[in-house]
Amino acid sequence: MSGPSGGAGTRATGLRSTGAPFVPFGRKLPGAGLRSVISACAERRRLARSHRTERPGGPTHRVACSALARHSAGMCGRARLSTDASEIKLIFSIPPHRPTPNFAPTWNLAPTDPLPIVRFDAHRGERSLDVMRWGLVPYWASDIKIGYSTFNAKAEGLDARPAFREPFRRRRCLVPLDGFYEWKKLGDKRQPYAVALADRRLMAVAGLWDSWRSPQGERLRSFTIITTKPNELLAPLHDRMPVILDPRHWPAWLGEEAADPAQLRTLLAPYPADDMAIWPVGPRVGNVKNNDPSLIEPVAAPA
Image (cartoon, rainbow, N blue to C red; front, side, top):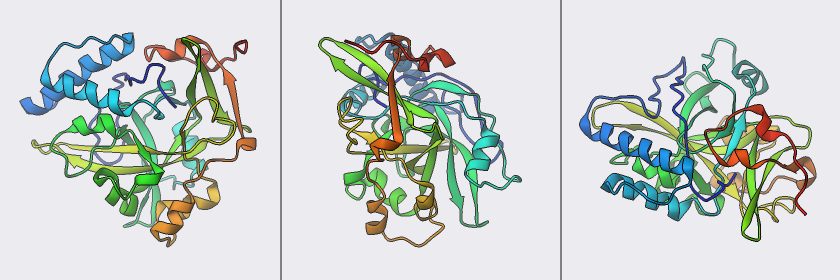
């Protein structure tokens, strides 16, 4: 799920869950401080879409771009989810009375985009599907800029990084995906590949989530995707892959069944290569403004 040039982009979708309050990225909010951060983020997204390296020079923008430059390389940051939200609820055994998010199909997800995730509501003893922003902002953060460096979490260091330590223990989730993209270096070029399960089932990617409140009291829920070492199918493309969980492990990961940290870590392993498929796709996926089913159409394999 790496980006074509290591940078992440986004599209303002204005989506919001019909459940708990959600602050869509790019929505105008009260308070000059948060508005200035969001304005800088929008400018950063514009530059990322065109893959330019220059920056307008604002302090917030410099922080955001430098964070992405440091943490995007070797990370998983482009995916797709076109499965209907109602079908996602059925696949993940979410009760019909739980709110169904108004989420449009997308074939080119990127960090800071909103995405429905599955979590366990311990108070009601049932699962829920909630839209959250991709890029975890821990509850203790002073602002949302930290989310630029936390859209992925390495499985090997979840206890070592403060942003992930408590979510790993208390706020684990599943991220439904139809697939993701990787880029293979071929000389001075990069060839994008689509990645999916061999039977084209929906993936359940291991994630962590948190809830943050701005100084003005607005709540933002966000999540990160956990990555691990690649299996033999993906190793030629990338040095990391998202952790994909088998359905039999969903209850333990969500916290529905008792499991200590050591047991949970054993789940964070590469998914079997024989159960996955990859195929080359066209370069249009490299631009986050392109978002349609043709992005996953196979092209001739590079020589």
